[in-house]
Image (cartoon, rainbow, N blue to C red):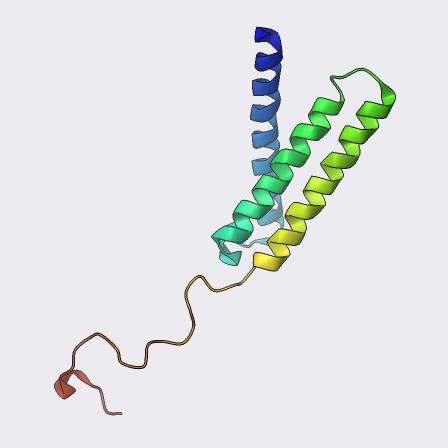
Length: 115
C-alpha cells in the first residue's frame, strides 16, 4: 500500500515539473508571459498538461497493453481539453468592461479634468 501511494506521489510530482516546463518552454520560445492570457487560461493549461502528464507517465508503469494505450489516450484527451479550455479562457476579462453608471468616487466637480 505504501509503495503505491509513493508511486502516485512521485508520478504527480514529475508531472507537475513536466507541465511547468512545457508552459515555460512555450513562453521562452514565443517571448510572451504565460499569465498575459489571464489566470483562468493559465490554470486550465497547467491542469490539462498536469493530468495528461500523470496519465502518460502512469501508462508506462502498469501491465497490459490495452490498459496502457487507454491511459495514453486519456493523457492526450486531458492535454487537448486543457488546451481547448486555455483557448476559451484566453484574453477574457475578469471584471465587467462597462463601469457603473454612477461612479462611487468623488462627487465634486473640482476633481474633473476638462480637456
